[in-house]
Image (cartoon, rainbow, N blue to C red; front, side, top):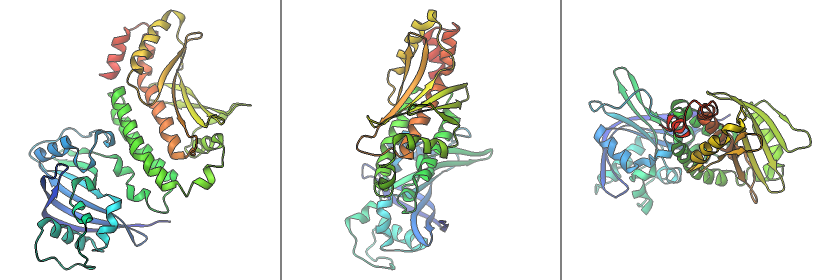
Length: 385
């Protein structure tokens, strides 16, 4: 069992960093923390305050890796100008070893960063003095820090949001005892916060951008972390075994369809309940997941629904709606090809949850068009704002 301990150093100081355009950015630090796991330092966190104006600059320039695809939705209201905003960041894992060459305590780390920032001729006393290397300057780059959260304490409560890195920090991924299940849990926790706060307002473009961005950032981390630990086990098992293990560990209720490599599942969303199918195409090395609309389209409404799904499919990146004209069945399809690779739990998770998110989001519009309550464009406008 891994045990965590946080060594926190209260630190009120002005610190100058370099932003993405190599311009100076001065922040007011509040604390520096070292996260230790079984007495090993695995993370360095820097917390600081900024004005609303400076936050807008950080937001606009996407400093501290604050990209749109890694943000959870805003909660609690809007920021106000009269109160400072607190930002919590984490040092990129590849730079942590360099920092630890010089220091081993939170206080020493704070002093070292301040020394680098001030660029004084007389250095502070370091625990392990070494001549500076090109990596040293990277410690002061805003892009070397990952934003974990943006918060503002207002009289009526806290306002702000977390980021993907708050749920799944790369330092955790890089730890030798990290598991694919723990990583998957981090992804789902983030998706759940994003969905609960934003599902009713999300557009297909925002949803697709979120999923595409996280997938591209995350899959490289997964491939690198588990290339050795999972290769000997998951590569040898069938795709059907992999997806069965996933749904078992994720507490889904399902049955296997006889003589097929397919599982039938039931999912309940905010807007309805429907049947899902998880299919392993062993020969092609593909995993496909379907959400089937609970109502078939009457023949007299199939042209309208065809227009509906054609319009909403345009611009979708991860998955699409399909219509069977012969019987009026609508389904949403996502999938992944793992030829030459392995189907890990971490890769299955986004395929499944991106799918059910989209069916749940567009189901009210589908039903409204089937019932003839609204025109197609109006139904889509209601969903996409």
